[in-house]
Amino acid sequence: MPRADIFDQLEHAVLPVLPGRAHELARLRALHEQEGLSTVTVIGKYNHGKSRLLNELLGEDRFAVADRRETTQLSVHVKDRVRWLDAPGLDADVDQADDRFARQAAWQQSDIRLFVHSAKEGELDGRERRLLHKLSADADATRRQTLLVVSQVDQAGDDAQLHQVLGAIGQQAPGMALHAASATRHRQGIEGGKQLLIERSGIPALRAALARALGQVPQARAHESAQMKSAMHQELVQRQAALRAQCTGLQQQQAQQRRQFDLDLDAVFDQARQDLAEVMSTPGPDLALQPDTAADRFRLTTGRLERARLQVAYSKVCIQLNAALTRHGAIELPTAQHTAARSLNSVMVAVLGVSVKYREDLQRMFYQDAGRDALQRDFARYYEISADRQALAARIDAVRDQLAAAQTAQQALQTLDQLEIRT
Ligand SMILES: Nc1nc2c(ncn2[C@@H]2O[C@H](COP(=O)(O)OP(=O)(O)OP(=O)(O)O)[C@@H](O)[C@H]2O)c(=O)[nH]1
Ligand SMILES: [Mg+2]
Image (tube, rainbow, N blue to C red; front, top):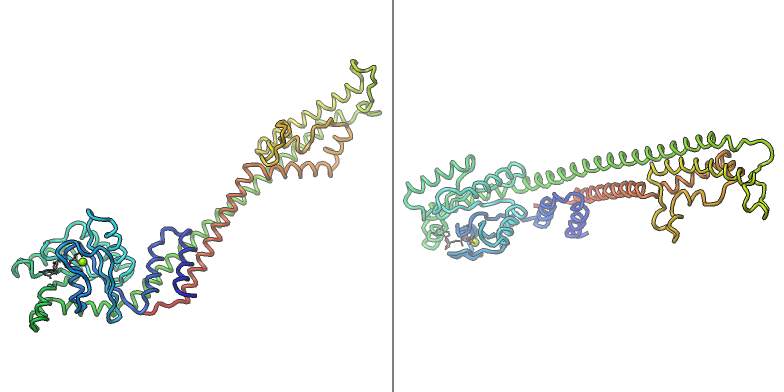
């Protein structure tokens, strides 16, 4: 598979799971895309001589130089297995897009940064200091080096003034070597064949420091890439563990709820047997079955009385059942099963029907195990499709999906192990 596709797949798999890792993914892609080449970029405020410094280091006028805000995009020139990347100057008050390009160059593309500050400007300002601090923290973490270049030193006044500026900057950037450079002197030295001027321009010394830093790029890249992969791997492992725990918790909750539902219903059915016992155990022929005649139309017959007695007892059981269903949120049928008659849309009606119950029915429903089991099963079926239960099941599915996504992300990350970065 082409490398670009591998990284497309990787981003597709990892970004939804670890949205905070966009930088690492972009950097890994850059590391692989730029294989065989090390990238050197400039970073600093505009007009501090960044582009011209690159031209002098290259020995070619590749990048546009001007006495105003000049570089607004990234531009690249490859020479001697180095990608020289010119970037816009950083400035808070101008077009944000320029700053975005500058950041992309510094953080995503570069192996080595030349932090350029003009001697003309004296000390570093607050923004430069913060940026330098971030860069040196990054060097500790990723081993990407930053060389601090004090540019345009020919413009800093006399030697004493330059010395003072360098001393002040040195104190602002403790532990960093300062590279004083003058592009102008270097160019004059080259054009006039003046070796001393060339030496005094600081460019040869900067080239040598850069060559040493470039020599360390392969190890730095291997370190950086391993570190990014391992950080993402760790995060994916932790994420999977958290999702598994979440899933287990929800499944336990689901099982516990169901157990409680079954127990509650069981208790109602047990109670029903007791409550119905009196009407069920009437000796002799079943009076409720005695038919009424036309002449009985307005009379309270034995049969009617007996049927009423049964219905009252049965209604009490229904009230208990309905209370149990209410406790568990299974009262109404799911919308998809609604009928036009609203009064029929309850779980009670769906399971028990609306017909009058005789002793034979009550016997079958509450005293015969098969009948009771069937009722329990029917109620449980409606319980499982009730809104809260469905929502819980949906949450479990969602967590499972996230877990699957995290596993896919980890597999995608592992495919990188077969890819070496050639430097
Ligand atoms: N005297 C002197 N002038 C320099 C030196 N380096 C650059 N300049 C001048 O400073 C101005 C800005 O230089 P650039 O290299 O375009 O500066 P930049 O930092 O790339 O500027 P942006 O691209 O706008 O961010 C130009 O006029 C350069 O000729 C130097 O060492 N000495
Ligand atoms: Mg420039």
